[in-house]
Image (cartoon, rainbow over all chains, first blue to last red; front, side, top):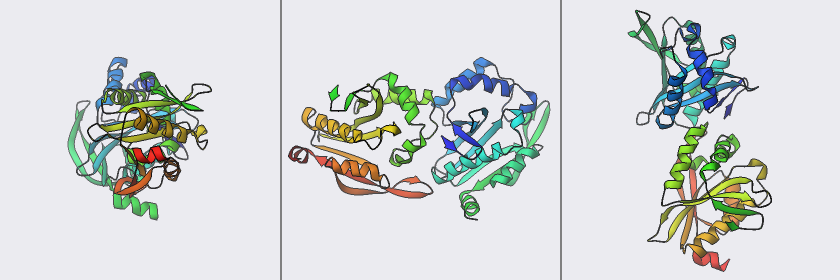
Length: 176
Length: 178
């Protein structure tokens, strides 16, 4: 458990799966997601089961009063090069733009830089998802490039912004 | 079961996973375990895999520490990395129930385990690794007769920096003369 002022990160549990299904089947929520909907209960259950054997770490984001509002996770680790990429979804729409995602990512970055000793944390994000890019910038990420026509979605190739934050930048922000 | 005055050690069982799940998601418990490299936010399913691995490992023997008055599990203790040829083993200890900290229960569990290791298993040497900042544990181990024999430099990364771990050990002769 990792707790901030608004949210905490906790382990996922099987009983969360119906919430995941709800989120991943809402077109408004999944509009910018890199993972393609729709997702059924069985698919989601088997994804949950597969986490045990995967080098992926998923954390549930809940508000301090215990309400599950989204997930944040480390998608791949590159231990040799001390890098990792992350992803996030705030599934509860009325919780958008309240700073929950920003705090969840900040908590995770602290853990990844200060406990896991990583050097570079990166992500990619739909170029049109400006809300998310603002959030990542608030967390200290910088855009370093664009993957052009990186994903096919709804019949159209979409561009993704590549964003990253380095350990030195994280420490400088913390000190400042 | 190995019985002391207030605690007992019984073999770890698969059904203990619920307790381990609770303990290993408690930041207060994890804080001092730096040397163990445990991820926070371990799911129940991941914990199940961990317990199965602990039970399957032939070189380790794990016990659940229970309070004798109500049989409530409060932690785990074990001998791992057992080296039969040299009659040595590494000890691991976690008291997961924070409400039971500071009552001397861990000390009793360690003494039960040392007695088991030396008097029943015929070990010659029991050693452990402990994070340099885990003062509570270091005090406990010293009070059970373990001595610092070395330092594992930059043993693990914690709170933004490399931290050392102490190596501590006790020999059978020291155990018998105490």
